[in-house]
Length: 192
Image (tube, rainbow, N blue to C red; front, top):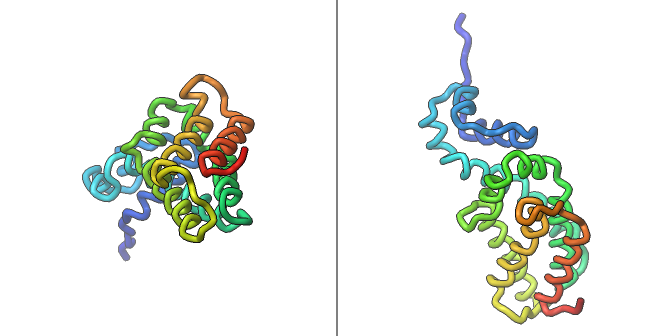
């Protein structure tokens, strides 16, 4: 009787990479393809390069957090947007896997998290833009600047707080996140 072998799938590669990232293990496409018993070319076709794979892993963790913040934050308008912003970024500030990822290779982590070519950065700006546009469409906010610019500035403010250890050598602090929330409130046209 022959033993049936199960072939790996793109979803298997993604799940394995996600588990590795959450455990703080470095992801190497060569070792990932070996573990999945597939060729490197096959893995590359499935996930693209390592940066794209990491972007997908990070987005798979960020998007549920964003949806949770949207569903759990009460109110509307400026208070709602700031509450969602605070919820997401406070959670990220205390995320052990994220902190570990940043400390393993700070420059590389910053590239993956914040570069304009980064999957996670661009998707975060787009998702934030949708939230702002929804609040504008409902008549809850009327920001004094273009929504796309506002969204971009909000994300960059969060990044400057969350990754301050890499950017300027200062450990990220909750107080700085609160200052960023105040700045977002002002950018939205609210009062400090």
